[in-house]
Length: 503
Image 1 (cartoon, rainbow, N blue to C red):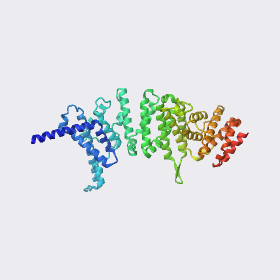
Image 2 (cartoon, rainbow, N blue to C red; image 1 turned 45 degrees about the horizontal axis):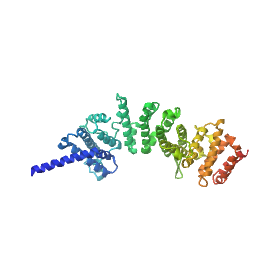
Image 3 (cartoon, rainbow, N blue to C red; image 1 turned 60 degrees about the vertical axis):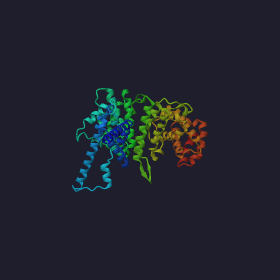
Image 4 (cartoon, rainbow, N blue to C red; image 1 turned 90 degrees about the horizontal axis):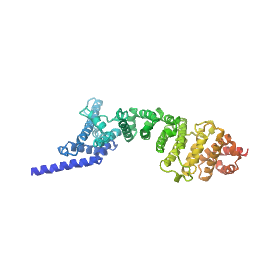
């Protein structure tokens, strides 16, 4: 019976090892390691138990008898490193608690005990360890050598992983000094992708910012942007910056937008360069526009000043946004977007997304416009965008009713560059489209849209008198009288336009 019991135990042990191996092959163990960063203590407890059972299976004698499980030693090395690292971290925290209590015996309540025994690992480190666990099972992976060397170099506390609150492997991989160009490129891309996956909240961003990663990425993009062979890496870097802005909370806005000048940097990237050389494909333009939208939105929310319980845009956000609006317009006009009558049919794929992102970006800039600037004549605050470019954008959006209202409002509020005689035709077209859109939306036309359009029409007629001789325009303009009476100063603006049309 003793031999029979041993035989049964051996069968169970082999089945246990094989089950653990199947779970690992399907990514379940990597999921458990990544779950150590969960904010739910119960989930972390389950994940920690799974990791412990998997390490136990790796250390069993029966697992070494599985000849085809060749990666087992590397997996045992990594899981043991995690176990020792968590134990060292727990010992350090206990020592600090004893120091703060003057060496007296500690009496832990339930919350302290839970935090000591079931710690929450920062997301970046958890993602790094989960990815490393997958990589070590594939010797053909490009990152296998780097991951293997990383854990073999850990010597303190018998190879304990202690970089839980840092950026393990990021700086050495992103600043890769590999001799082979393709290897260094793959290492940098892997580091950036890990950053995107690991930046999940404000706490993660604080760790990232402490290592000056945003500045490093921005300077790297600035050096790569003129190199045709590094466009792919540049796109991942742009995605990483957008991820940090969107997930990093107030700390990311304060650090990247206010301190590092992200909006000025975005404008400087495109300012003196040809758009087609920077972004030869529409997907590249879309990624850059997404970053602009995220940056302007975050800046607007951070710099808005409360008044009567509401937030209003600040002057600084407006003057930061105006140059970016010109960048957005240049990127959009450089694209080979179709101008057929039915935009829903004529644009597809990235072109559809390009329309949407252009609309979103211009609208975000519009929302930064303070009321006192919006009420001024456009000629009183010169901008960077020509009337010809604005008219070209408006013509492309004219048939897309859902987006046209927001684009029209944004263009009417946007300051103009110095006008010239050749802008007369553009002024005529712009006013004609603007007035036609307002009348086509009656009676649901927004009062704010009507007000800002009338101010822009007045400004253009004052500088380009060509519209005064157009009877068709005059007859259509008369239909806006009722709308103007419902607006503050609407009748005054309407009367000024009426006088100019009658001259």
